[in-house]
Length: 118
Image (cartoon, rainbow, N blue to C red; front, side, top):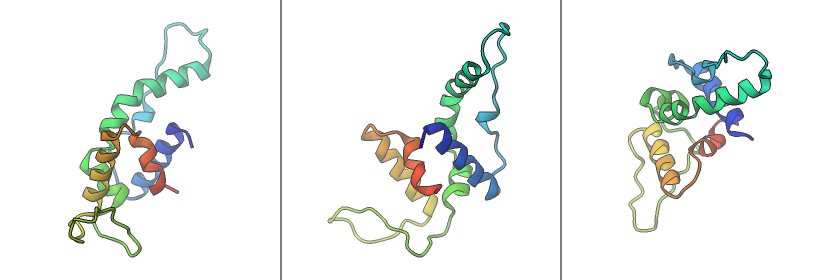
């Protein structure tokens, strides 16, 4: 799935879960040159929205709407062998922290979201 499609599905999910933030995908570029094809403008709009998207996925209200507060049956927690088996108090904080770990490993944070929006 492309990053744009992943993010669109994540936005749909958080809105369905009650999130009331501003959708950066609604930011549209309208160039002065009307001869630029619409598909090029759409790509430019997606590129322009990128910094806002990365910032947005770390906002607590967005994370709460995506992952929720309460743990669900079947949730798995990634832990090393030397850690005690304790669930963090908030589901969203745990998954947000895991996303930060992915970034530190050089991975794409939007790709991390893909497993939660299927």
